[in-house]
Length: 194
Image (cartoon, rainbow, N blue to C red; front, side, top):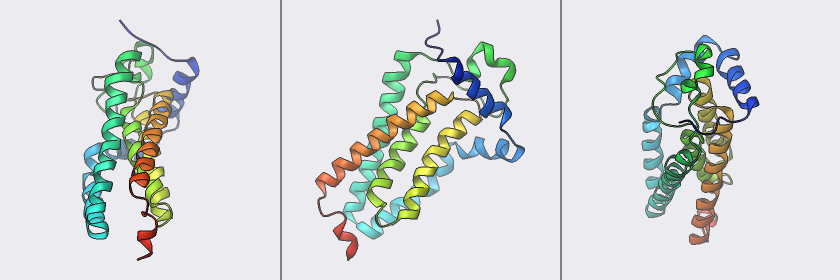
């Protein structure tokens, strides 16, 4: 039994992004780029920087960033995906002739994209905390979050609507966690003047 199939425009845009707007270097890059293990060194460097720059407050930032990702993943994977039941594009029978074999399809459902939700939760949280003090890095973090979602479409694992919904969910969670952090740390922005 299959669940929701989504609107026609979503499948049409998937085909444009997955099949038509392609090039060989992205075919090589995006399977690695979208893999969460690729970013482990970056996460490690971020933890070291937070500890060296902010000490115990940096650990609170790291814990709340991790909680943002955990909440986004839990809601997208354990609540919404089973309720909607949408198959991944690479598992959708009508799209099989058009799927480019860039990555193993894998099990699981498609709506919303947990990759998009998780990465947007993290990048939005960091963006809202650091945008005043590190504007370029903050905008790059946000762009990184969105680009992970795009890579999920490119490799054939998600429809555009999956990524849009996952991104919106993640951004909302990241915003909520940033608001909570700033509420709990009222002097956050003034500590950067030291």
